[in-house]
Length: 142
Image (tube, rainbow, N blue to C red; front, side):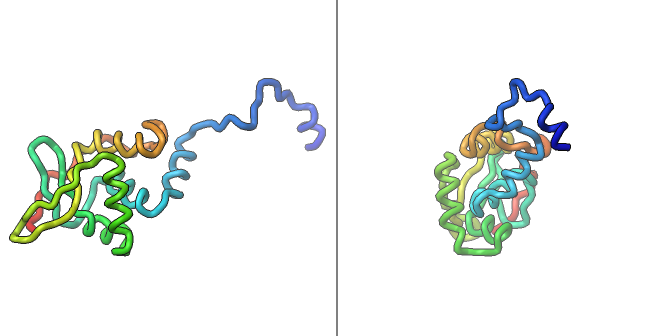
């Protein structure tokens, strides 16, 4: 085996060039910090079981506390998730629903929300999304 390695043609090979594969993108996603992982899971699955508000333009209001608890089960991450969503450029709001205010963010239609997140994480090629889907058309009462 050593003989084969010593006589292998390595012309043009550079150890510093990393080949971008789907497996590498998935591995990066699994190693995200907690707040990035929470938002990535929401954008990847477009699935939630907490109250949201849908707008006709395809945007959706996501309550920060509900998002954090649903995916991480740790309320201490609420501030970090909110800070991340602000950095990405999602719109902060506190709408009143059912007589109660909810702090959270308006996310644009799912393809745009994913693009904004990917740009924040290093560019559109940094993340391999599973499919092109939309936010569910359901609105829960608060």
